[in-house]
Image 1 (cartoon, chains in turn cyan, green):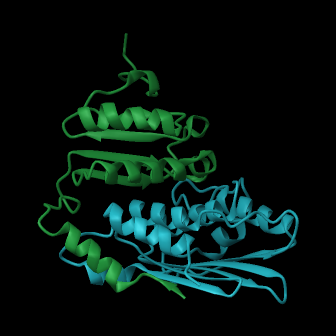
Image 2 (spheres, rainbow over the protein chains, first blue to last red):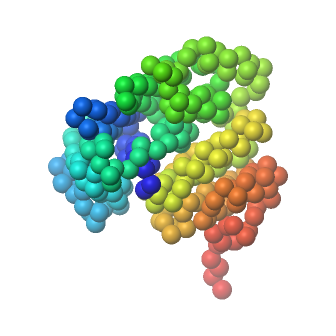
Image 3 (tube, rainbow over the protein chains, first blue to last red):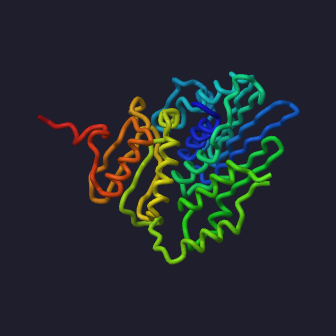
Length: 177
Length: 127
């Protein structure tokens, strides 16, 4: 994975395949403490203690659930390389939360990358799922909520309209000061 | 704070008035981008966004673009499956933007599959 936005795409795909209807993604940089924190929270099926224990192990794979694989181990490796950590909280029926921290200024910290393209790919591939994206980078905040977009365009066009998605991409990638 | 502005969405609403929207149900072509960990690492997101731009370019409302997980052929990623209605699905492998452009022009728009970029033609035989 070249950048963190690709890891986020991968982790969120886990959430959608776990039956989530709402996924909240947050990216926050705390300049004072030099920490970048990425959180992905979903309301999907969640995992039991056994699956949760194996989630970091690349060789723990349960084909029946397809809930685990290389996604989390790679994300964890990216965090650790940059002086950070990864946590996974989950309970059956209560969704999953993945949190990763990075030393923001660490030389091995991957750049965030094209978050707009990640969000657009997620919406395009899972139009029935709602996504909330919130970022706070260098004091600039961005927020996108597909629930309010869907409400606004209801009856006229759909969330997968390329014009709507392009707008999402622009807002995420070029926040106005 | 950067936020999606209601005015922008209204503009889109205005622009799409009068056009027949087929995105909800009926479609002519379905393109699936394989987006497992392997696909993403190999560049599937670029292909997805490229196709989205192409669809907008031709103002098509009868093409569905979607994603799926790992198909078990990780060494062939990035990969897409193109299904033209009433035609056999074709899996295209080891894609870049150039190949995807040709697939879009030939298969998606004109209905002519490109066997040179496909995983295989036909399925295994019994003889």
